[in-house]
Length: 409
Length: 152
Image (tube, rainbow over the protein chains, first blue to last red):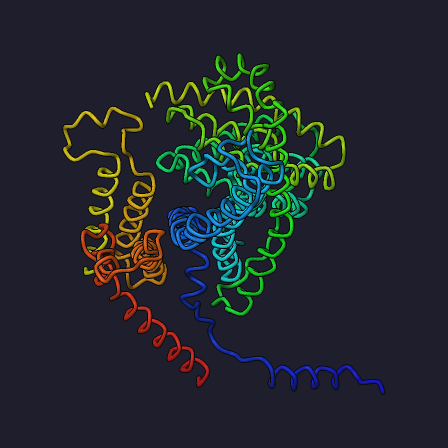
C-alpha cells in the first residue's frame, strides 16, 4: 500500500496530535541545578562539597565504622585462636616450625600487621582493612554514577585535564583507581587515543593510591593524609604536563551527553556494589595472601636484610628513611597496602613515615596492576611506564623529603 | 532577606572553622606564618571551606531569589551545607554504633557521641531546612503554570 503525499501529512498530524504535548517549556529545578552544576562558578564549589562528602563517607563509614566492627574478630578471636591452635609455635620465629611460620608468623608480634603470617596479617589486611575501605568507596561511587553527577563532574573538570593533554573522562579511571588501580587501568579504554591511554595508565600507576592503601595510610599517618593527597594530586598534574609534552600523539576534544539528575535505584546500587566488591575480592585476597607469604620467605632467607644493606645508602641519604624500608618496598610490588601496613610496624619518626608512605605509593604499582598495564598497553607501554615510575620515584620521593624538612615535621 | 542572613552567618561559621582547623584561636597568633601548623585538622579545614563556599552561594543566590538561577544557586549552597552536616551526623551515628572497636556498648558510651560540641555547620541545619518549603512551593508553582499553558 502506498500513501500519497497529503495522506502522509495527515498521518503525521494524527500521530503528532496523539503523542506531542504543546505548551511553553518550563525549566524544572532539576534542569536549573543540572545547568548550574556544570558552570564553574557554582559547579566547582559543589564539586568540592561532593568530594568532601565522598571522602568523609569513605573515612567515617568504611574506615572508622566497618573497620572497628571487624577489628575484634581478628584481635580478640581469630589471631589468638590461631596462635594457640596451630602446632609448632616457639618463643621466637626461629624456634617455630615452618607451618607455624607460614600460617601465624612472628609469635612475639603485638599488632596484627606485625605477624606477617598468611592467615594472621594476610587475612587482617585483606578483610579487616582493605574490604571495608573498598566497600565504602564503591557504595559512594555508585551513588554518584546513578544520580547523574559523574558526567557533570567530567564536564566540569574537562578544562583542567586539557592542560595535561587529557579530557574530563580521565576523572573516571582516576576515581576508580582510588578504589582499586585494576578497574582504573581498565577504564582508560574510555579515552580516545593511544597517547591519552598510555599517559593515564602511567599516572594512575604512580600517583593514585588505591582504596586499600588509603585505608592503611589512615592508620599509619592519619593526620597527614590530606597533605599526602594534595601532594599526589599536584605531582599527578606536574608529571602529566611533562608527559603531555614528551609523548607523541594527539588529544582530541570531547563531546558528552549529560543526562538529567535522577534518584538512584537502591536495587541497582546493591547489585553494582556487589559485582565490584566480588571482582575486587577475587583478585585482591589471593594477591594479599601470596604477597605475605613471599615476604615471609624473603625474610627467612635473609633477602630483605641483604636488599636493605645494598639499598641503604640511597634510602638513608636521598630519602632520609631507615634501611628497613627496603622490605616493604619489595612487598609493594605484590600488594601496596600490605607494604604501607608494614611501614606502620617499623620504628620511625613521623617525617620518615610520611616519606615512606609516599615512596610506597609512587613506587611500582602492585603486580596485578602491572599485569593489567601489560594487557591493556602491551610490552612497550609497560617498559615506558616502568621508566616513568623510576624517574618519578627518585624525583617526587626526594621532593617529599625536602617538603617535610621545610615543614619541620 | 532570610537567606541573605543565613548565607552571611554560614560564611562567618566557615571562616571560623577554617581558622580553628588551622590551629589559630587568636587573630594575632604566630600560627598564620606556619604553612602546616602542628595538630592541623585536614578534614576540618576541608569542611570549613565547604561551609564557607556554601554560605557564599546561599548569599549570592539570595540577592536575586525571585530569579530562577538565583534560587537555584541558593539551593546548591544549601545542598552543600547539607552534605557537610550529613557527614557530621553520619560520624556521630557510626561512632555511637562502633563501640570503639570493642563490641561492648554502654548507654553512656552510645549517647556521648550525640552530645555537644557540634561542628559549626550542624548548628545551621534547622535554619537551612526552610529551603525545603521554598523548593516545594517552587515545584507547585511550576506545575500549575505548565497546566495553565496546556489549557491555553
